[in-house]
Length: 104
Image 1 (tube, rainbow, N blue to C red):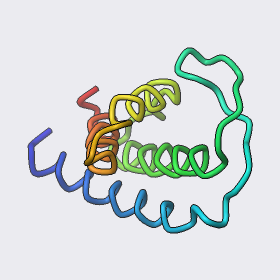
Image 2 (spheres, rainbow, N blue to C red; image 1 turned 135 degrees about the horizontal axis):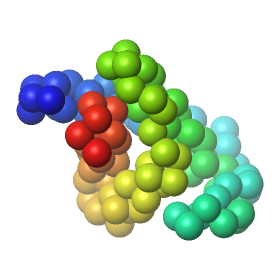
Image 3 (cartoon, rainbow, N blue to C red; image 1 turned 90 degrees about the vertical axis):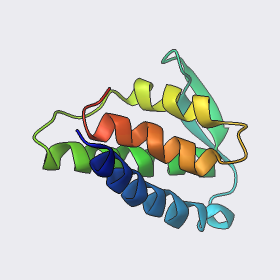
């Protein structure tokens, strides 16, 4: 995997995340989810939606490379690493790109 491939995947994932973020106002309320340890929880619906969009986009990129789907809990943990950063969206997309390319 080259740096160019990683950055290309990051850009695709960042576009998917930004599109999902534009729908936040439509996703009020709470939704069922799982935490980083796989335990059932409830979170804001827009958070669950954005995470699902990123998982689907990551797994499409993996499928294009002949890779099996990424572990959902790993992607939840990747999002957790980005949470709280001023460049959350870019970090989350980059961490998912590492999974999309098979680097992780």
